[in-house]
Length: 298
View 1 (spheres, rainbow, N blue to C red):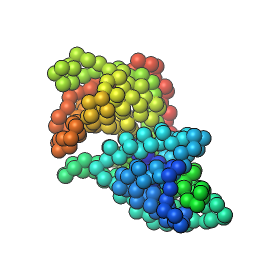
View 2: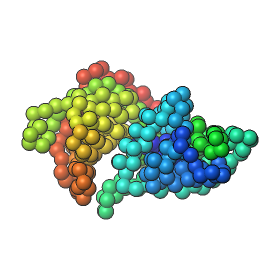
View 3: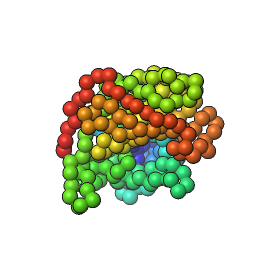
């Protein structure tokens, strides 16, 4: 429901849906508010989500991938990044139970967060089976979401491939399982490579958190990691300064000190019909800060 990121992503989705200090229609029940939030999330309607979710500065929420959000701003940014990175979303609700006592309500929900990335024959469908719990409060006669927690329904808390940093064992072609690779991607990275002609000699510095999300020093750039497994690192980038966005795929070296791969555009201004991976260049990433030790297993 919320951020695969995964952003990104799932309960994030729900929460975002429930957005803030605004309001649902007068007389709406907690269940109606929740269903409206989920629908708004699926429609990538951040404005409606914001209206149904508390914007309290000290509000704390949790989602998959170890993400914690305090307040509304960081959550809203991750939600928007998730919306920008997918072609479309589907969020069917399988179970929803709501309890109400006075001006408080709490719920338990099971749903699938389904991400579609790419177009045509290259489109990928990624399903995240999730559980959601949370609390709503009636303020001035209107129900809003004030706290939530999201987790995976998969055994061991794992996530399907392509949804972010895995947390469960991966199965090899021989049927055996090996621990997932929980690399800490945090720190500063120098990014150089093959750019557009007028920036061919330019290199940038990216500052990332442990999950591989952060900013870089060109055109207000932001990076969001959507998959890291077996040193394969995939994600999206967005530049507000020149209104462009795209994706990348790189392979991290065994010593975690550098990564090589490719990048591409998915949008340039109003142009969105750009074939994926056909307009871009090559990447070379080098760590500028010491690599944190990768953790094997759970």
